[in-house]
Figure 1 (cartoon, rainbow, N blue to C red):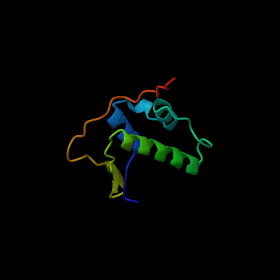
Figure 2: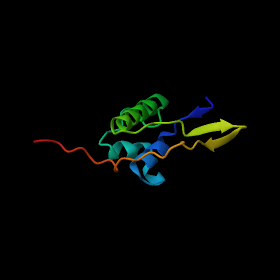
Figure 3: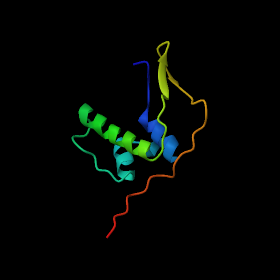
Length: 96
């Protein structure tokens, strides 16, 4: 894998939140989701990241590769066109 989507960067850019609000548990909480599984379990973390990605896609995010390795160095990949972000996620409202 020489290029990938860093979901924390995508989440922060899309919802316009600072990096300290892009920890996995915080992202889930802000999207109105609970953490499923055991924390720091690779499989459970992956499933929860996938849930976040699905929600971002539903909210209109265009997920794109944003990091890559070049010459052994981590590099940020900038998009060719700026994307408009969505408003910060809100806790879901439940109907009575």
